[in-house]
Amino acid sequence: MSKEDDTKIQNCNFFVGAHRNQPILAAPSSSNVTVANCTIDGHNDPNVSGLIEHRGSGTLTVQYCWLKNAGGDMVQMHNGGREAGLVLQYNLIQNAGMAPGAHGDYTEFIDGPFTVRIEYNTTAQSGGASQGFMVEPDIGSNPGRIISGEIGNNTFTGAVNAFTGVTVADIVNTFIVRDNYYDPSRTSSGLAFGGPIRGGPNDNSAKSIYLRNVNMLTGAIVQDVKTSGISRR
Image 1 (cartoon, rainbow, N blue to C red):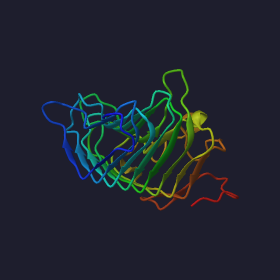
Image 2 (cartoon, helix red, strand yellow):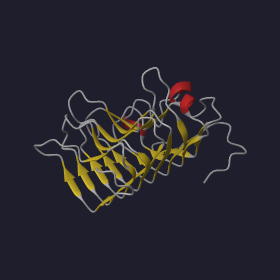
Image 3 (cartoon, rainbow, N blue to C red):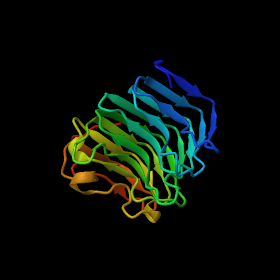
Image 4 (cartoon, rainbow, N blue to C red):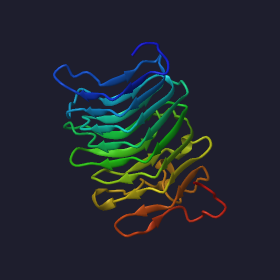
């Protein structure tokens, strides 16, 4: 991708073929990229690390897309220290980490600072080895930065380790996981990994907020015990 800002890629059909090219790569010089109404099929290729990779600044917006069959990750945010944002909404996200030995995430963040909005998506996972929406921008021993974020109004299904993960220590303001519906029957950790490092309900951080998430098997509401005084959409 060139140095153009505000690039829009829409109404396209991408399929990873014999040349094994990454479908969408936004260069460090890019800013404010939108991918809309596209189908992107990674064909389970082990040589393509992410279907969409954003290395620039500004906001990557991915909406109304069908992302499927990624050998590794679905969306990668590798911003090299430039402030960047992700808006991921109204998508069908199906089958990450499908290559042998792969560990694919629906989202992968490295470095920061980031602002994040992941909402109104549906996920499905059959086979492969995957985690869901991971917002964990640390680089080895170097901490990342999450300015603020929200994962809300999504429907999570399929076989993943966990549907969400947020490194609590990286949050500057708040990160909210709210109003999601999830089926934990094929997960090892359910909605979130839990605990003080990777986040979850009652992780003892005022910056990490879980509200009104619904276990679709039991109907149970999964949220922080202390929710009084918190007003969210």
